[in-house]
Amino acid sequence: MAAPSLAAFVDGRRRMALITVVGLTLACLALTIVAIGQGAIAIPPGRVAEILMARLSGDDALLQGRDVLVVLNIRLPRVLIGLLIGAALAVSGALMQGLFRNPLADPGLVGVSAGAGLAAAATIVLGDRLLSGMTMKLPFAVLPFGAFCGGLISTLALYIIATRDGRTSVATMLLAGVALGALAGALTGLLAYLSDDRQLRDLTFWSLGSLGGASWTKLSAVAPIVLPLLLAMPLLARGLNGLMLGEAEAYHLGIPVQRVKAMAIILVALAVGASVATAGMIGFVGIVVPHLVRLAIGPDHRLLLPLSALGGAMLLVGADIAARLIVAPAELPIGIVTAAIGAPFFLWLLLRRSSALDV
Image (cartoon, rainbow, N blue to C red; front, side, top):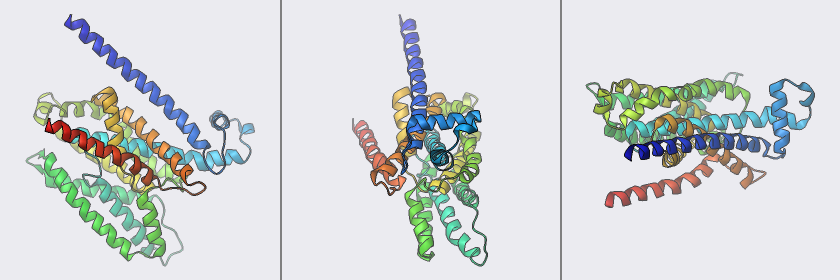
């Protein structure tokens, strides 16, 4: 009787996973249509779908009018950037949690976000000063590249500090990440002190997070940096599943542990650096989404990573809709919305884990 029960259990989990994948995909598409229609000029979802279908089919006869310009030139790149960044932050959180075997892990805890933020702040303040005597503006592509370099330098420093004799200590990496994050925060504050009024306004608005000012140029600069993380999910899933048993056990299963760690860290540095440079500091997406997905379908990273990508995309686009509607016609920084959602959830998660440990 045990074998049929086990088979029924596995079939039930597979059906639940399939339902979750289909449901999240359809919900993400529906939310995308709704998000494109929201704003100062409200556009019905049917009209948004008609414009998108006409654009895909190349039917220029239907691509006329003010709403077409709003959808294709303003709203669509903003929503696509939101989908991309939300997916990247959620997958980065899932990777860090799998790597550290801790559901509280997040790129912000290991200094990736802080290092990327410091580099982006230095690009804003020092880049403007270096070009102050020139007529050219600082290209946007420099910002994600600088943020990636900052995130990569911080993660490489962490890796060097935490690795001894070819083995990486997760505890040492977490503690070093806290220290380097504090140092990066102090240097970012120093840059804010040295900045002028315009730079300080840019830094303040950027530190709160926003998808405003999105364009096809920004999307083309960010997508090549973020997409490798999403494309590498199938390659990392088996290794992360093995690491759940422990590093020694994963090694004996034939998993290249150090290669998986290095690949995950570099991809997270790429994705988080580009996300921070594009939308500013947006917190809690990497904690909330993977944990909710794990509660729904279990810890198998073959499903956890792609479903986290869908969930993160939905969360950030939904938060952007709320940011545009709560104080309309003004716009609330999206980091405030995600913090309002994520902070209570994080506290609940801490209390839940503390209660489990006490028992």
